[in-house]
Length: 603
Image (cartoon, rainbow, N blue to C red; front, side, top):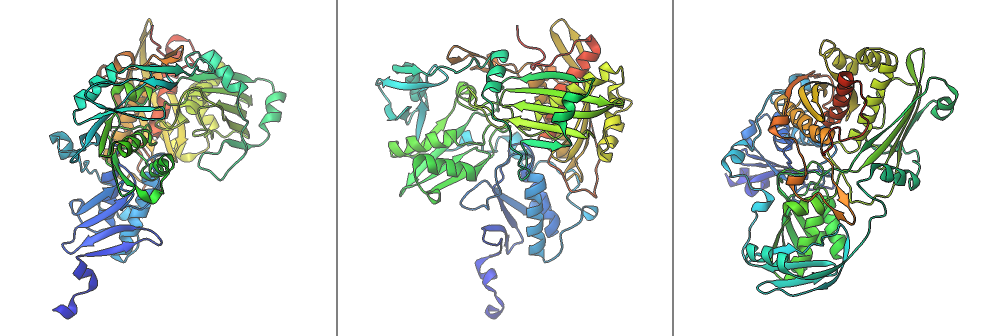
């Protein structure tokens, strides 16, 4: 018997190692598979999807596969969990690794047995029974609780800090923290400690759209063509700059989006522990390897001395890509000489996290014989995603003008595609109105992409404001039906059609679409972070309106499942159509065109 035992059998596992990379899949003697990825489960269904990919290619049940996610010491660097890239990038990697392990070719979508079927979230039982472990649940022996003392101002320099009884005061530059074994004690102490702060004024009022838009334009940097990036800042064809000034019948309009907050259900939390000059941090970031680099740079240690273990947080929406809390926890733990747990309050989540960028979009366009001929689209500050137009226009210049910002800003679900598509789909509707033409027919007149046309045709007989686009390679369209009474806008029904290529898990795909549509209601109708003087006034949920159950309309979702087309990312696309579809529905209802978000501001 001993002569027939291989090294792999003696170890109890077999390994597949990627070239110059860590282990992707381990196979135990009992047949259990363990796969590894740096992607993080954020509620978008990545864990289930990747497990399905391994199960499909290894010809085993889903229950036989275990997935380790987000550990920089164990997992290959698959990039951050962002940009709807898990489906088009991580799933093929996992499928190929599993197929190689099996010793066969990757399974074509037409022969899928597990992929393409409706599989429930593998975490479902743990979530509903409370067994699911979130970052705020982490504990370890000898752990101290920490609380950072914050300035009342948006930005400030710490001049002087007092003492407070019953807790230890730790200061590292402008970082002032209190630590204790008692989490209640540090919270109370943070409210009692006396500090002196020097506020840093805003260069421009962040809550004044006109002033901020003018400031963006005055301080902007024109884009330079760079096609070798996922989101080119300049997309050109023909000669838009020449034709926009030479043709009659020009239409010009501008659109505005304010800063808004991510509002995850779970505020940030992290536990940091140092040993022999290295730090291990457990938290809920979306990008373990980039955060590892951030922590290493901030604490001036090699990246090899930093381990990030990212357990799935209670929501992120693009807001947990950076290492703010991981850096704070690591700095405090190093000075405290003990493991430290740091949790942000809801107020800190509003005031210390970055926001979705505000943005100004200006569009100029012309028609020739009733069809779009020239399109000049300029986005200031919000970003380049969503810039390319799906319309067949011979002369195009879509531009992202980078600007400084008075407010911390960063990724938000779909990045700048919300701003760019809101502006573009509103502008398209404005042309249809000027021509006294059905917005549906005007779009078909200017769209040649067969898949997008097929999606639109599914909505031909549905009433309501319309928006469509090609986003993350998905073809999508939305109809919105609304009512309005005074200042109150009520969305009654949303009808959505999407072509995402081959649908990996139709059940989860529909859930992601529904969630994105509901989230999009907030940014479209009422979300806005308010600033005044040197302070951020939006600090609590009581002063920030997010969608409620009562805001949720009837939502109908239809998928076009194309097994001959590679799957497209799905987590972000649907949110981009909500604001323009509602704005266009309101114009149809009231005759009044709204170009600034939110469409239903407070007051």
